[in-house]
View 1 (cartoon, rainbow, N blue to C red):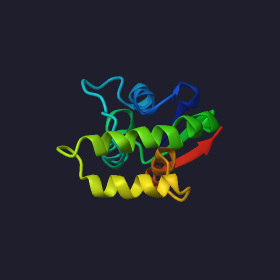
View 2 (view 1 turned 30 degrees about the vertical axis):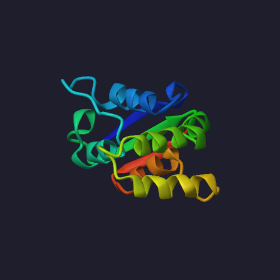
View 3 (view 1 turned 120 degrees about the vertical axis):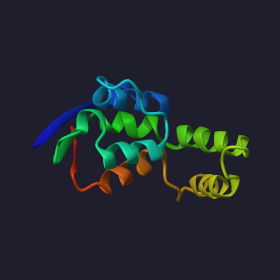
Length: 130
């Protein structure tokens, strides 16, 4: 059974807003929400929680994708990585430092790029920019 979901990219202004949009789409009927974590996104798509439950295929229509790409671009990714560096008690600083250095050199992946990689790793999710 194929389901269609429309992600409103204009609502994505930063990482927390991106997860707010995912929670609106997929978790409205659940008594818990996704936290702002790439692992949580991967788990959602893998385990098919919330509205994804019971669907063999999912079409994710991402409206205003360019807006989301900009919002989850270099400045927001830099803030995300810096937060990890500021919390060595929670995060290993070495990977974050390498990611930040690559980003500053123009060869690193943005948060948006990482989100797209996760979505692409799930063959039952068909991303459709709109």
